[in-house]
Length: 166
Image (cartoon, rainbow, N blue to C red):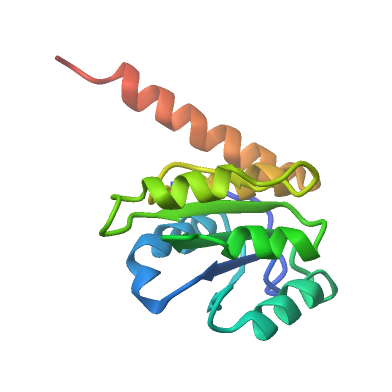
């Protein structure tokens, strides 16, 4: 799908975190999309509520390990993205995960209601692919070949729509 002409470091540039292993099916498209662009990622289960110490340590040390963008998916109270954003200046993209009780609306509202000064960019409920594409856009600011790959990707989307017959 994407045609990155540059080989990126094998060191992960994006951290994909999820609050529960049950979120893996929702989060996997983020990893696959980054892979299509040749971007290494580190995917982990870390919970804002059940593993707060490990989550905070991971977020605080991520930049030193080469991480440049966080993608964080969580459902229900969905505090994972906000907790990460509270302890790092790296961009954080939140994915509200569809919940059983409120169909993901609770997750979405939790993420978009961050207090002033601690932003979390939030995509659609279960929107892992768009979260990854937003991460690619952020990384493309520093990597011209990645910018070219993203433009090529978008051109293919345009061509697919224009070729549609109804």
